[in-house]
Image 1 (cartoon, rainbow, N blue to C red):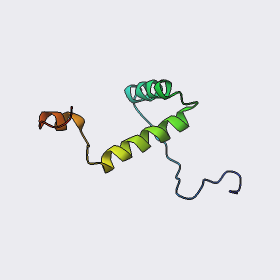
Image 2 (image 1 turned 90 degrees about the vertical axis):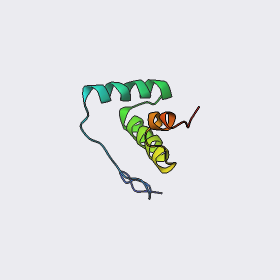
Image 3 (image 1 turned 180 degrees about the vertical axis):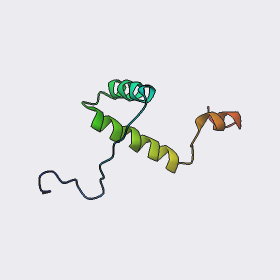
Length: 70
């Protein structure tokens, strides 16, 4: 059991200042996923972004322009 206030191994706390447009997208993402707060929303969004980067697709529109994708 982790002491109160400590994250499980392999997790890091992250946050920052964002534009109004980015904030609006986070709120929309939060509603789409049914997430309870912005902290979990940011964590989920960054996790999805990281998985997309690891799979090699950094800009889906470039993939479509090159003839890939759906």
